[in-house]
Length: 138
Length: 138
Image (cartoon, rainbow over all chains, first blue to last red; front, top):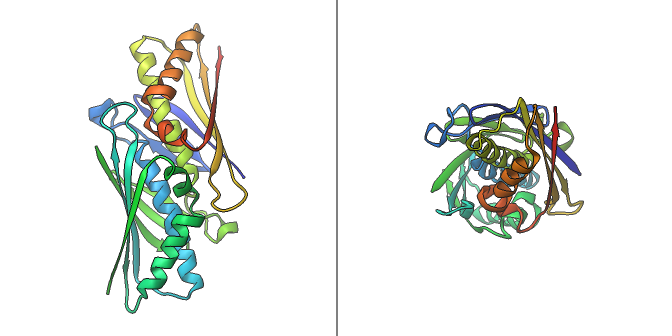
């Protein structure tokens, strides 16, 4: 499948990016010469990962008929200090809230996303040290 | 440097992602079980690349005192047909509009971003076949 996005330069460090008909504004923070009118681009890599694996997990838990009250994916990334300041490590923390959520099935869904389904993960894990955790609370 | 983002599940396939204080909504398209209330996550990888390398280039051209009227970065990505449906190839098309834009200096700025500065590129090029083009029109 082919995907296309187009980033139009606006002013300063700001770009408006058309992503499938939705506008995503990116900008540098004031300390990096921008005005902070949008997120900086690199953390969008973390957002792509959270969304991709999050949707995989939601979809699998739905098929397994597992209910939850809340679900979030927090992704932390640590960049190199020298150029290119790429992510060296990322951690994805899967957090669930709800009653009687079976840990083994959640773990299975997360594992399937990480190892088989998530196309974002498949690219990152070739060059970034990836880790994850699962937390379930009532 | 450490970056953190947090994706909160909303409903269907939709997540609201806090990226440095800015909300980025992602959703699956209707044909993939979502409502299309935001872009799907994978193309955010392309947006991250466009923003990252675009800012590098703007910043270098500014230092070289090179003016332009318009600038955009279009990124195309082609995914695998089988799981994990990761990007196999990406192309970044740098497009400039303006009078007397020196091609060699623009090429130098793009090359520096691709080879040295862009941290997003540095991750992708380990596992994705990357290409680019430069177009300058008056």
